[in-house]
Length: 79
Image 1: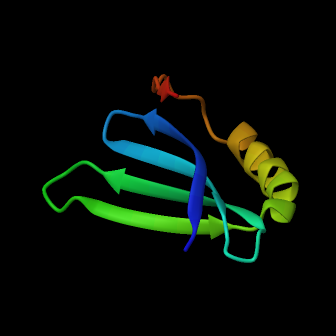
Image 2: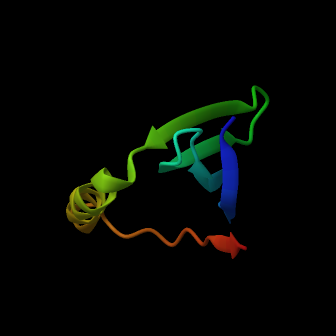
């Protein structure tokens, strides 16, 4: 059984993200990111991330984000 330790929620116009810090049966921690797209189909996508990869993922995402024209989408963090 994978036990959730902490959950945070991000809400955007058409989607919601749940970010969970979980503990595996082995005792190791990992992160699960679930996105639910709010439309007729209610699509849900899940990504499990090894925490050791997060710093590199953040760097790559930040570099790519810096190349994308800025948008005025607002988010709401729910803790």
